[in-house]
Image 1 (cartoon, rainbow over the protein chains, first blue to last red):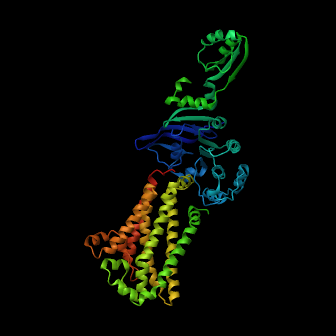
Image 2: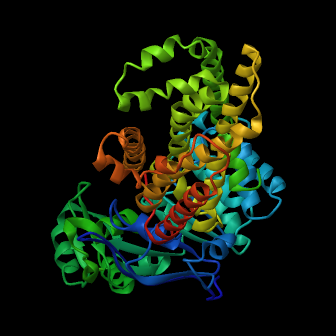
Image 3: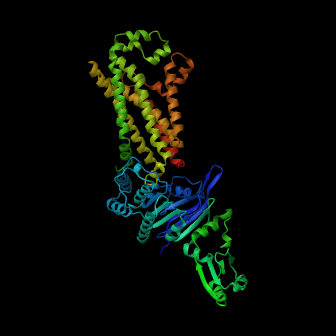
Length: 308
Length: 260
């Protein structure tokens, strides 16, 4: 899917505000064609990292390069990217059309056709002054501004926070279309279903440091699955005692009568062989949600990486 | 609106026009009462004031001629005060004001350097101040026409240029503080405070020796409201402005941009 051409390279990126270290030695690479999720709770350092990538904040240490160009040269580095943040401020006394024409002109391109396409896809009326828009509609204009010049890289900071579910779906479609055209996306979010749906790879950031970086598919594969097995009442105890012998098992509170519920992070064949010895009424095996991984990384202030 | 300059000037068009109309109206009103001053009645009452207050009110003897009246009533107080207010307001508003609202962050995400961003905003601010300054000439000329007097515009322009440079100088103090820290309140306070103090010191410097020593540090010291072009003053004020612009570019280029 990706051809390993680095688009974003962060090397030891660090930001200190007084005595507080907001970002601590963040090192990561995002390759061409990837949709990269940057996950973390509020205050973890996601937006600070993005602001350093955009040269809005100056790193205390480390470097950020975009398309091989230092982030300190925004005139060059920003020419090939589009940016959208959830709390983006735009020129409120301009109409959306005036604002978008100005933004398009900054890239030296005629964006008229693409602007119209995006406005139609998002059902955005561009004749209204930005101050008269709702937050969600302003976000739509921000998304059009980020995409209209056909950038090669999108940097999105909590991009869908103002969107309703229908627009979120359109957004997902546009991002898919962007990726299919060879675009690269760096997206911070805490809407985990969205990250799970869109991203190829994610990094978890906590207290300014990267806790883990992994492919979404690998992350899901190595994470515990939820299993629920229904048996006769008499078989509950023997089943449970057999299951206890498996590695990577963690019993969960019973949700149904005559059922054993557990999370299982081990290989599947031993579990299947074991279950075959019992008269099973029903069994369900569910993939873990990203929310569960997220909580796993941040619960009780523990990284908990070793448990995965 | 292909450039930041064009877009920002478009956004500030009502501010520029509003200040032009306001300055024109104030100067027109000031000129319309010239005849009351020129007959000497008000001048006689001003003679009873202490010297320091006479400086604040203007030289009564100068009111006898239209040129002296324009110098004292237009350029000694009204024009510099109005243009300083415009200058500080627009320069701080476009820099720290927009930064505090979070707009600068959005602007810098586009392919534009910080130097270019700041210089284009400065160009807009200077244009707005110049338009407001043109209101001085428009108001005086309209007033002269109204009272049936005439005075060569070429004799007004040296005062206007000098006045504009003083106003831009104090505006640039705000611009520099805003560029260095991004704090609107601080920039307005420092530049407005220095302008107010400078005016007080300059007004009372003739009466108090200590203030006379301090006067050299005020921009009003280099503001001539009589005679033609004072190239020494104009050169000095231009040099101060240049230093403040360079300081602004250097500090703005090195620091973090504030987020909303």
